[in-house]
Length: 398
Image (cartoon, rainbow, N blue to C red; front, side):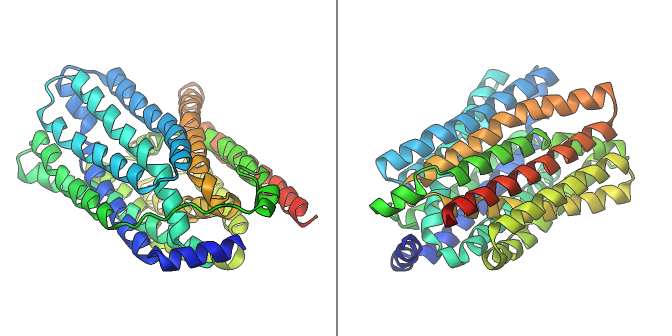
């Protein structure tokens, strides 16, 4: 019943249009963000900071985004608005970027990074909830996969464009910061053409059987937390590539390869999840991640890095979009922004201990052990996911 209502609502209120517009919004926003991201650490140091300060600023920024998602997701559901939160979030992020170009000290950089990440926390749950209501259930995996593909294309293009401007401007970092506002404003302007889709009233039967945040969603979040404990900061993959003798320029190309593979595979695996089921694809994503991390720990040649980063892109295609579609399958529309917010907050808060654990294992023992533990936790998460979701499914049928 709910699927029929959502399909009808998405069709009547321009669901496909919302999907395309929000996908291009993500493309331009990620293009803007990734144009400058690789320049920020060096810029902070040029203002008198050090590596510890870089870590502090980025840690504050990411924690802000993580905590903000849960709060603003709940507020979006409470106020029954999506578009306003999306507009505000992308607007805050866009406006903050050019001010980096005139920042005179690291405290200003901290404030601007705080504002930019606050914008991400403000917009993400509401955007994903709006997307879930704009896509019919039969094509939900494909829809989220397409959105993830455009997001990844922006992430792949950003560093390349940033490096080009950096090179042509005789390494003028501030100019790159200023130019980054252009794609950000393009993405922001597209949101005005997005249509709000009001949340639906759940029937008494749905509330009884589905609940707001049901057991399936809760156990999925538990499995993801276990998985994230082994999915530390991607900075460690950069260190691994550096150990393999890959230059900084080539590392930026490695990241572009990762995002490009993710962009190509996201719609394919999203569509596959529509046909064979999300659980199967998610389970496979855990196994692929475990294999990639296991191999990262055992091979450190340049050729291995190119192959493994491409493989890591396959994991990206298997996971991010399918995760969001799976949550939409389990949670009723009125609670989805809350669910997306809690899910993203759980991941964000787990990344800190995950990175600390990984760094400790690498420094104290070896890279092989650190990557092996990451692979092992992914396998544990796969088992937990399989057992709990099978149990939930049997409970629903029963």
